[in-house]
Length: 157
Image (tube, rainbow, N blue to C red; front, side):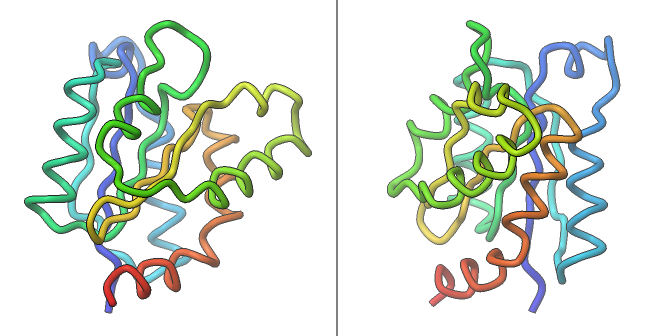
């Protein structure tokens, strides 16, 4: 059975149309070519904690999505609030996922340690924050993709 997936790109500039979203479509392509997925929602959001939080809650609670991936808003900028929005709604953190992504990223650049990304569970939904840079998104996804089907299977019971 396909994993239902939602992708949230968090970026003020993309939301305002000043630049195009590269990371959201990259996530879509990578998942489509490596896993049995059904991408049921894709959205752009500004770096505003309430909007991020409300979208995540709706996707988890009302839509019953299996996997929510966010991209962007995980750094040190004062506007980077994706981790805080995620922490506000998850019930359990899944630190091993962010540790695996961090370990892979550190092999490429010391800047990977500047990520504040969070991963966790709300109900039966797994939420994972990915960085905003396409290269970091691809590296991180390739690390966690092998574990995702098993993780979702466990969450579904």
